[in-house]
Image 1: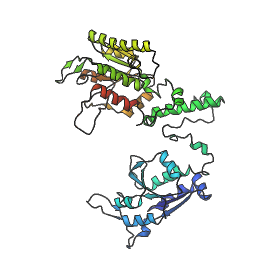
Image 2 (image 1 turned 45 degrees about the horizontal axis):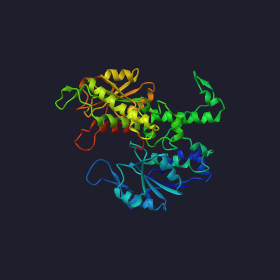
Image 3 (image 1 turned 135 degrees about the horizontal axis):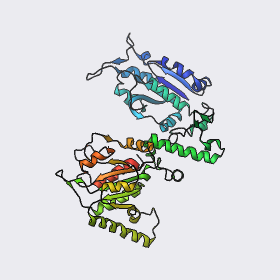
Image 4 (image 1 turned 180 degrees about the vertical axis):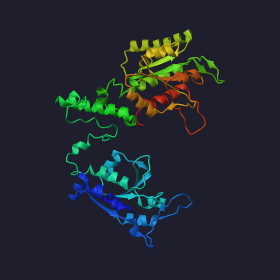
Length: 429
C-alpha cells in the first residue's frame, strides 16, 4: 500500500514512522509512505502558502494554488483532508481506506484550508473527533497507524484485529489478562485459566457487551443485538438496562395550565400506548399513579379485559397482542407507593418539558446505570401540564427536556414517553 502525505512539516513523521511494526512494514516494502510539501509549489521568494481570510477574522488560511498543485502531484489516489469539520473516523472508515492501494492524506494548518481545495482536489474529509489540533500531521499519523494494521503482513497475527474494540462497529474489546494469576489482591477470572474454550469465548463476548454498555452505550444503540448475543446476556442488568426500568405515570400531584396542583383524569390512550412502548423496549414494568379509587378500578378492568382475551386465544408471547403489553401494569394511589413497589432504592429520574437546574442527558444516564447495576430505574412522567414542583425537587435527576428547533414544546405524555424510551433503549441511533 502507498500513502502520500501532503504536509508543511514532513519531519514531524520521522520518529513515529520508523518505530515498531510500522517501521518494519516500511522496511519490508509492505507499506510505502512518501511526502509532498506545498511550499515546493509556490512561486514567490518567501514560499508563502497562507494568506489572510476574506471577510476578516483571526489567523491565516492555506492558499488553494500550492495545496491543490501539491495534491495533484501525488499522481491519483484517494485524497483525504484531515480537518475538524470532517466526518468522525471510525473502524469502518479505516477498513475502507485500508482496501485502497493509494491514499493521499492532506494536512491542514493555521485557521483552515481554502474551501476550494476541498471542492477541487479532495474525495473525503475526516476528523479524529470533536477537538482541534494545531495541524493535520498528528491526525495523519493516527490514520496511517490504524490503516497499516489492517494490511496483511504488518501484524504477525491478523486474527487480533478481528476481536479488537470497534471491530464489529458496536462493541469494545473484552478485558485482557496475563501472568501472574494474582496481582495486589486482584485475580485473573477463573474462566480464563480453566482451559474451556467455549466458556472463554462466551465470557469474553459477555464482558465485551457489559463494558460497552457501561462505557459507550451509544455504540450498542447503533444496532439490535444478535439472537446469540441476546441469549448470552438475557436479563443482564448492565447490557439490558431496560430490564430494570419502570415507567411511572403520575396523575397526581401534577399541574394544570394555571400552575395549580391537581389530579388529572386517566385516558385510555395513555394507558394503552405507553404500555405498548414499555413492551417494545423491554421495560420491567408500567406503574400508574392516581389517588382516585374509581380510576384505579377502571385501569385494572381495562387490563383485565385484554388479559382474559389473551388467555382465551392462547396467543404466544411476542406476537403483538395487547394483553402482553398490559400485563405488567400496576396501579398505585401515590408516587411513593409506586416507588416502593419497584424495589429498594430505585434511581428516580423525572421528565419535564421545563428547564431544570440539574438536567441529566440520555448518554450520561445510561453510563450512570452501567455503574449501578443493582438499582432499578424509575422514569417518572407527569400528566396534565407536568409534575408538581415538589415532586421535581425530590427526585435524583431530571432528564433533559425533549426539544426541536421550533418554539413549540408540548408533546402528549404518551408521545414523550415513546421518544424518551427510544433515546434510552432503542437501536439504530
